[in-house]
Image (cartoon, rainbow, N blue to C red; front, side, top):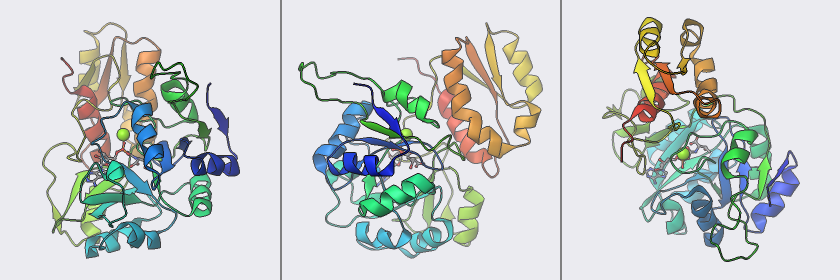
Amino acid sequence: MPPRITTDVADALRVLRDGGLVAIPTETVYGLAADASNEAAVRRIFAAKGRPVDHPLIVHVARGAQLADWADEVPPSAAVLASACWPGPLTVIVPKAAHVLDVVTGGRPSVGVRVPAHPLTTELLDRFGGGLAAPSANRFGRVSPTTAQHVLRDLGDLGDLDGGGDDETIGVDLILDGGPCPIGVESTIVDCTVDPAQVLRPGGIATEEVERLLHGAVAPASGPSRASGMLASHYAPRCPVLLASSPAEARSIAADQVNPLVIGDPALLDDLVRYAQQLYDLLRRADEDGHGAVVAVLPPAAGLGHAIRDRLFKAAADRAG
Ligand code: TXA
Ligand code: MG
């Protein structure tokens, strides 16, 4: 059965309390949420995504004060970042409280926590009271969804995947439609279990802002995102992705491609907020519209440019084998 699409928070609340899966809108991307305290419900997330079970999930809560419910101890860096950035596109990795399920943390001694900024999801989390474990609501290795329609296309009707002939849905039960995600790339992940703290994945909060808030006490990122479970070939459309450092270079690369989609015209490069908002929709459209290749212009490595570059490098990574 295809999932229902609704704006009714009470409906979403019922599904979650029954151990079901709800796609939730956030300011970054849509998440695939389950009650973080219900092991069977969390396991269904991995089945729906086709995601390896050792990949840890972020726990989403309504307010910053709840960080202490999930952390064994709140490191000073996490307290500073949470109070400055929440609600917002920041995830802190902290030592986990004893009750946090292994299925959520992938057996790690730490847990990722975030307070998302989206009115529907804030109301949902408030009324739910607990934490919602939620990865991005895409099939594993695919581009994250930034609209309810993206979620529906990825996870909408997976049918009876286990082949048992029973009625159990493996996909998402309900999609809470909060419109297009305003930021469009995932949260910035900061590992606060180490000192100095370390940015594991650049995202909606600029790395420079994290450095400013922690007075520069941030370990330098070593190459593309290091969040555990992040493989190089994530965020990839099916067609090849080629990178250019300027619109002129993109045009010359595109000239050798069959039906290329060029991303990153000068207007988009001048407006990185819009570039981030549109990035995943453009990458999805490349496949849907049957383009032979994507040629994307890398923005400068500053502000949101860090996150956009990181996702483009991953999309372009060699997927042979
Ligand atoms: O913006 C976001 O962060 C979105 C929305 C839905 O909140 N969520 C998201 O989740 O991007 P996901 O699962 O697609 O990516 C979360 C990343 C994964 O790479 C995971 O390995 C990392 O966070 N992560 C989660 N818990 C961790 C932990 N305890 N230690 C290290 N990395 C962790
Ligand atoms: Mg993801």
